[in-house]
Length: 155
Image 1 (cartoon, rainbow, N blue to C red):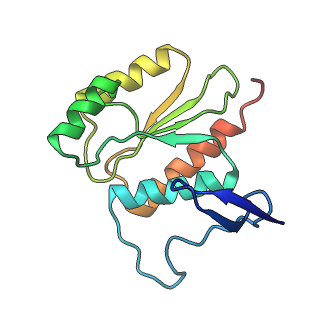
Image 2: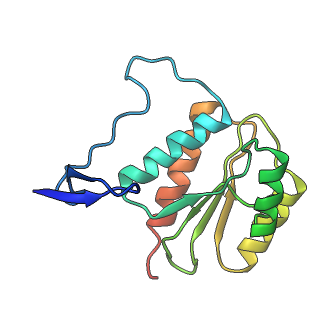
């Protein structure tokens, strides 16, 4: 179905509407690629895993390098140090949602540990990936914890 949309500058263009366009997500890396192994890539692969499951989630801006002015604006807007990297907005069992702190070769900070404790007390399933795990073991840990969480009964 072709529809006319007005873009930001006022001109009209024929485009296929999003509801009619088949949604296809390309693999992040080709099947035969040597995967980079960093915390960033681990989180990217986990986000892709959650997308494939159709899970409602959001990642925080933690770990991103920004300019000082952007960092100040983020702080004023409510960003807090130590907040978990990914939040899953799917209540299961006794939990309101799941919070995941992605770790690969780095130890959690005291702020991250405090957030985990605080979220757990408030009824969230909060985990921190053990920092001593190898890349693929860390990915497997996150995927298994997520599947165990999603398998909980009730909501």
